Length: 325
Image (cartoon, rainbow, N blue to C red):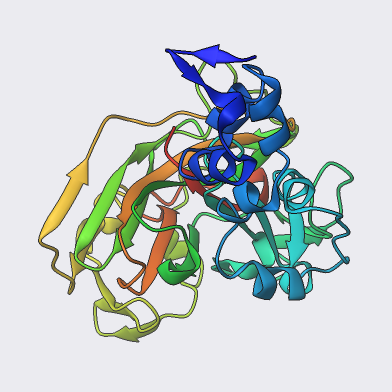
């Protein structure tokens, strides 16, 4: 007879125990299964694990590149704790094991990378350690601009999410220690932004070849830009860039005028990369609260467009969106 806190659980119907367990979390269910045979038996019930699967799980599985085989809802849950490719291999989907909340990674092909389709500046290559068939390799640019978007209705409700750029730096990387990059995550009127360094002074490698970092952005054509006198207008993102006469002498002085306003802006400390278990690096772009998935798209970005510093040797796998731990 199993007893805990004065309760004889062996007298409770298994369906009752399963219902109670389904009101907890995947982590709590696994812990409870270690307490008594009654909990262990109820822990395998589809009633329990169906509550931890997303309500749109059928739609997600229909978008999987490879068919997901399973014999129970419990098996399906743990199968989805490892990423599966969906949407023609352009995204990956997985569940956070402790909570069952939804997580996504947008592949580099799903991101907007300025000059990304210009072979002189970016290449699309395959690397065995990537979950996607292609990653973007930065060859040579002085204007680094990456954007990603995801509809908040695809995410779990009442969850604080964080977006991360997942990347690697090659042996000959150059130009990522200075200046800092600007990152932001925007949902509705909320913006989470900060400065970030993809490479610290302690870990920067000696580049195999060197480009003149004193060259300014004015020495190359601005991507997707139209010139109006001394102003550059980028219609795809609605920003206006003012080019002062002193720009050539002071490449860091690029005035930025934004036509957007927000009611909530969070700027925090400088972000640095961290090693992932899969061997890649990640750096936080920002965070946001997803209450009911009614805020439209979340917009995520990383930019370094003001200094005109040449960069090379960056591999981008994608942007991952997962709950804040």
